[in-house]
Length: 171
Image (cartoon, rainbow, N blue to C red; front, side, top):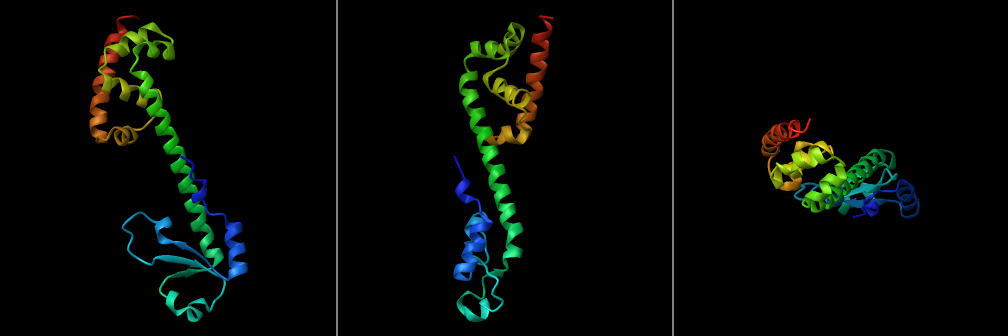
């Protein structure tokens, strides 16, 4: 899912402030659900904006220069969120293929690894691949599977022991 539309382009903000005198952004776009506080953040270089617009005086009013670091932080968050979403989507695609154990041998291109992987149950197999081949953290795996990271860690400890035991048979 592309979220480019969520990014804030400072050139556009400056143009809007020049033409209209102010730019506003909803607090919903800046904060998670349940945020309690001003509904709008207003960006203007007019020092008299609050006095001229008393209905908006209780909103957060800031200059373009004050807003710029906020916009950068939002853009960085959106970019990181996109990366994370893409990484999870790729992981889910791979898991659908992983259930076919023949693919594991082809993917890893080693019969010994395939045999060792076959000793793991499906949950352990997925977690093992997510952790050691895709480099996902225990928390990321837990989030994907809807379980605690501690459960993932315990499961992986068992999976590693089984994998080592099975793999050592072929060495």
